[in-house]
Length: 211
Image (cartoon, rainbow, N blue to C red; front, top):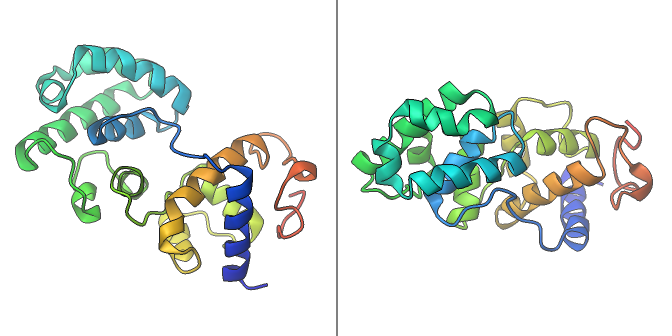
């Protein structure tokens, strides 16, 4: 079985296992997803979803958040960890969206990368979830699982994993595939305990069962 064949089989099995999998960060506007994904660094999505409620209650749009004092933002987002740097990035990002993009989050990957605090993972998430464009989000679950399954060989650097996956994952499947990996990584192919291979829908085609 080639990597591409294995990838297509993994995609189909995960579709059946997690048919409704989607982004676990709550948002109803593109700028809110940008804020949440920055806060999610080294923090759980569940905690971010709680914290942003207070942030959006006080600052309800891009302009309000762009005008906000960084210290006030930090006070609200501190429970997510790294409060100072996250608040600084969020403030600068909102200012740039307001001043250079007319208050709208750009739908171009390279333009997204120009925004403070936005890396490839965040840009791909926005491209896939908000704009419905091809995207591969290489978060920790994705990197761990594609190595275990055998879709990549011992690659841990996010960009290199992303580039390797682009070669074997159909573009239209990338975004949903990565969301399903998150669900599978939390429930079955776990990081902090031994993977639950006995209840894994991929066990017979996984390269590293029990690793």
